[in-house]
Image 1 (cartoon, rainbow, N blue to C red):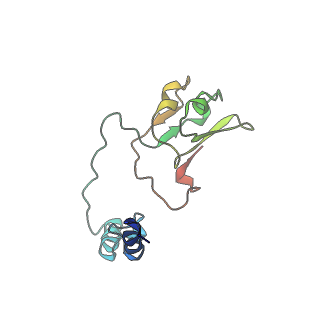
Image 2 (image 1 turned 180 degrees about the vertical axis):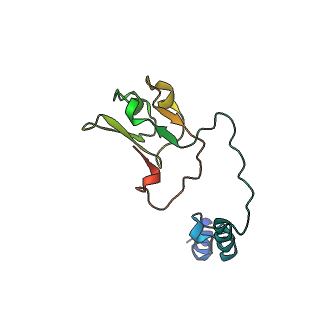
Image 3 (image 1 turned 45 degrees about the horizontal axis):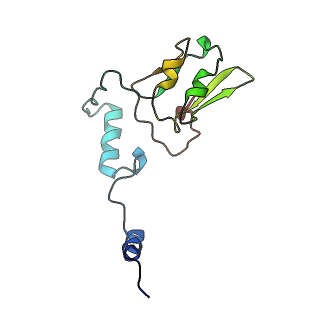
Length: 134
């Protein structure tokens, strides 16, 4: 019987360590974690991050007070990341599902949705407060 050519490679990959660092800061190498603590305490300085380009589409901001509950954003969202809450006639945006296409911001008649320049949105808990916009 002839084996598939990918099976040996698959078995090798199962037992190899990842080539990249895991993202949340707690998984960074100890030297970087110590440096970040030093920066937080004010004993060291870090270079400022690269500025985001104009018209960058980052995390969605939602002005809850100006929302009229028309649900146009829910209908136009291709990723189904926006949920309508009938009790309050407001919306909830699931940032972990959002593809940052900005279609919801374009169609909103009251301009209560906008794109920010926040882009470090990775996390381990998809229900964390910073990944839900209400």
